[in-house]
Image 1 (cartoon, rainbow, N blue to C red):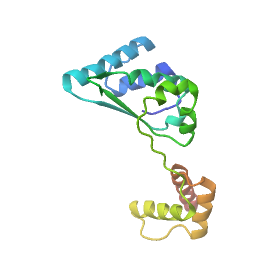
Image 2 (cartoon, rainbow, N blue to C red):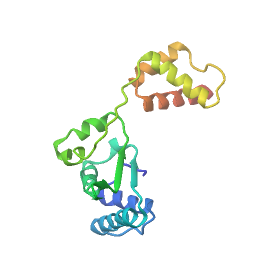
Image 3 (cartoon, rainbow, N blue to C red):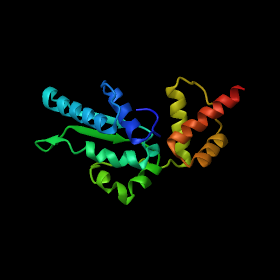
Image 4 (cartoon, rainbow, N blue to C red):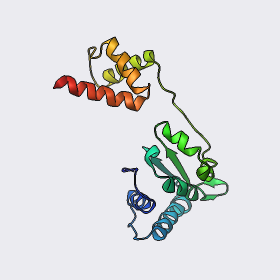
Length: 171
């Protein structure tokens, strides 16, 4: 999914389009269509649906609050749907809110990648540069230390800072 800052109806509209369904006008019609599609995939085709929501820390509470309803579908104690929420550390704090207790109770596995320390940031950036085909050192140790401090060791922020720094170097 893209555009994580949508309202509840627009979220389900994007989800229905992503599932290849005809988008409906109302939230109720969208939800019914998606629910029926998930049930059909599970019962007729023996498929389990996976919804991956990147940038989930940007999703409004009203959207997050609705996800638990989709997770209610199961047969013979086997869920028909899995939802993977990927986001920055703010997502973890958001999920601690009481209003989302019904959703968080349905999240069986949680993985938190802690911020990298300065040595790990160096290794991470160098690995990313090598994976991108770079054959020489681009960042000095001092530069990598600054990236580490500026980003708090959060990988997505490290990536953004490194890309920004490379672009600036080209100017």
